[in-house]
Length: 497
Image (cartoon, rainbow, N blue to C red):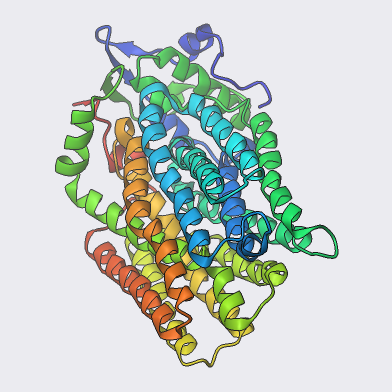
């Protein structure tokens, strides 16, 4: 697969898989069926590694922000308050919101592949600049730009992975990829343990070097993405069917060793009218009129998980330092088991989303997460938890909450038509994060500043209530998309009878 690219000679495609044209803009193609018929292969593994690393980068960034809270407060240059920490974290999320919207629109309009590199470049530059911050304003600005890069990555990456992975693997793959966030979290925790140890390095230099870790990892990703092709599904609709078929030919050679003969397979063909772009008016009509119910589900799931995750995780270190007296340099040791629970959840429960089904598993994971948070929050409020038991409680809660949060992205990315998929991911991620994520860290920072366990418990109850409400919505309205082709879950807008 080293040579796979979207510049494969067009003659190959024309010889092996003729494209049926009824006029200059209408084609019949079997590309979706060909992609979904493939077994799992090294190609799919490499796609997951090269694109899914986005979540590792995000996990690294978010964990560093949480683990470095104490160091930022103690820094002789910055001297942040708890509110300052929450404000800067909210700036990161606000950047992710706006980045997702802007880059999401571009992803649907100019293609998935170009955005891989644009958003990664934004992330790299901004996270490196964060290491040079000199006050709250500069730190918050650079965190905002870092978030914009990561938010843009979400839209391009989620849509591409959905469009390249065969239908029968889609649920588990998506959940595990999103769960890889916690591999980045573990990396961030280890970095914090080493770089915040005053016996090893000066603390004011340590947090700066920690952010440079993300920039170095991002440089590696550039090389990993060079061989990834454009999405054939996107190309077939946007007026480049020959190029799309050539890419699928190359993928088949990588997976099976040869280009499959259409005459030996009962592949379903779909008839499409190609288009250059999709007007925003049509996007709005599709999301809020044609698929209004699905939009309600996606928005509810996104808001609930965004508040639940961001409010708790961004203030993880503050709870440990302010209520349990844990030194800032030791926070990483508590994040490691927490990260393990978050990664094991999607890994062990993910296949059930493809077998038991989306509706049952989304309802179950959201509901259990909410109930467990309420219980542990009560135990925290009456003072019976230690730092160790608090960490164990969070580990168990997020074993269920991690696949729940990943399922929100899965739901949004597979239940809308291809032409609006990236923008749909961006829109619901942005609204959910804007309502649930940006408010959460600042709110919890203020609640922790009061020093009152009851105030923090009230915040936990709010997160719990949102998750339980989302579980109810999922049980009533979720779509059974497991093991189904994307085109059968939501036909392309270009689809013709």
